Image 1 (cartoon, rainbow, N blue to C red):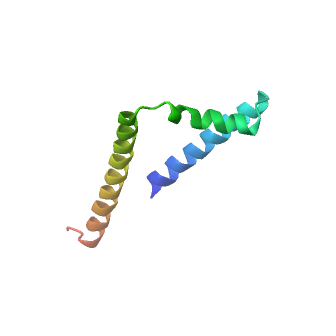
Image 2: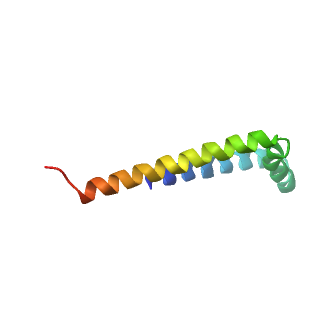
Image 3: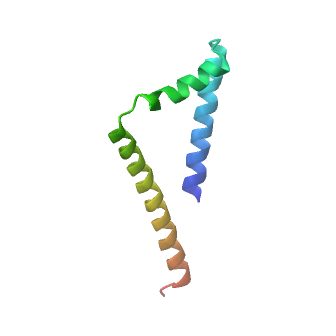
Length: 78
């Protein structure tokens, strides 16, 4: 859970920083949204697969770590 929280917190602060810098440069809200979405519009299908696999690996690794910790709490070895 800590990993998800820290990742979400960093992503949120990064987006806030990018949006605030764009606003200070005088770019409108629609321009900011277009800049955020544009990199995904030029991606090849293979790149979408790679991003999906990276995200899937992250989720599976985090879930596996969570299950291992839960299993160790239920069966403590003395």
